[in-house]
Every structure is written in structure tokens, then in C-alpha cells.
Image (cartoon, rainbow, N blue to C red; front, side):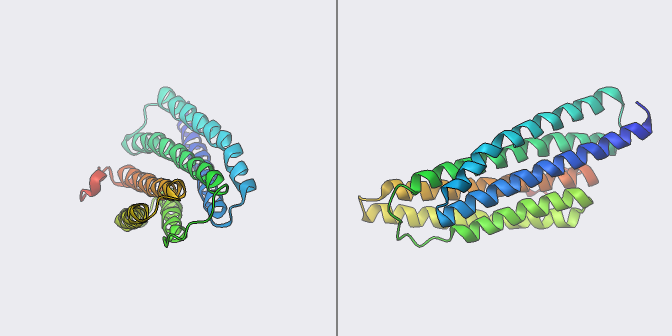
Length: 220
């Protein structure tokens, strides 16, 4: 493989991964909209499109392995390919989280609405924006944007903790709607995991661009 073809392959890999990221982000948005509206048709779309994300994951892995096998990449190119492999896995997990939320919505739709005062849409907005910004940081190699994603992770963790405490209190006061409360808690937990995956992606962007390992929010 010539250097020109190799760099074209890197660009193709990047575009494939970004397209997969768009699918994963869209899946979470649809699942959250289904939660807000109890629209079961949106849940079915999320479940149906999971196969597209899984297929994209396989394609990205194959493209990455081919590039590693056919060339001896320089340091920054090697870091880019490694980052792509790791980001690929996180995006597939984001798709899984969307499916989990959709499945909880399908269960919630069969039960009376809860009077629980929790702001799932706000938590979802934060989590989705973290995924979007992490992908934009990857697109533009923007370390500063990636860093802002890391800084928002604690906010989502706090939201998840608040929802857990609200659900725990509601369960202690009522015996009638535990299943609904548990479904709400699982939705929040999956949104917290979406934010975690966005954080992982942002860390991988920093690793690719700077060669710095900032996992666990270590300073470079």
C-alpha cells in the first residue's frame, strides 16, 4: 500500500466512524423522544437500526486491521488507528444503551405514568451533547473541545445520583409502582453510561492528537 493510499484509507476510516457515530447519536435521541412521548414506533426504529450500528462496528474493525497490516504507521497515525478501534467499541455501546432505553420505554408504556419528579430529558440533553461534541472533537482533532466533554461527565453523574435518590425515596413511600420507578432508574443509568462512553471517546481524541493518556481525568 502506497502512502497516498494509506492516507486515503485513514480518511475513509474516519468518515466511516463518524457515520457510525451519527447512527448511535440518532438512536439515543430517538429513544429519549420515545421516553418523552411514549411513542412505541420510535422504539421499534431504535431496535431495527441496531443492526446498522453493529454492521458499521464490524466494518470499522476490519478497516482498522487492514491499515495496520498493510503499512507500518508513524506514531500519530498508529495512535489514530488505535483511537478509532477504541471509539468504535464505545459507539457500539452507545447504540446498546439506546436499545436498553427503548426497551424500558416499551415496558413503561404498559403502566400508569409515575408522579416522580425527575428530569430525564435534561439528563439526556447533556449526555447526547457530550457524544456530539466528542465526535466533533474527533472530526476536527480539537483537544480543547474534547476536554470540555471530560469536564461535563461529573454533571451527568450528579444527575444520575439525584434520580437514584428520588426513586429510592419514592419506593420507600409506595408499594404500587415499583416497576415504573425501576424502569425510570434504568433509563437514567443508561444515559449515564452514554455520557461515560462520550468521555471515553474524548479521552481517545486527546490520546490521538497529543499522545497523552488522560484516562481517569489525569492531567497531560
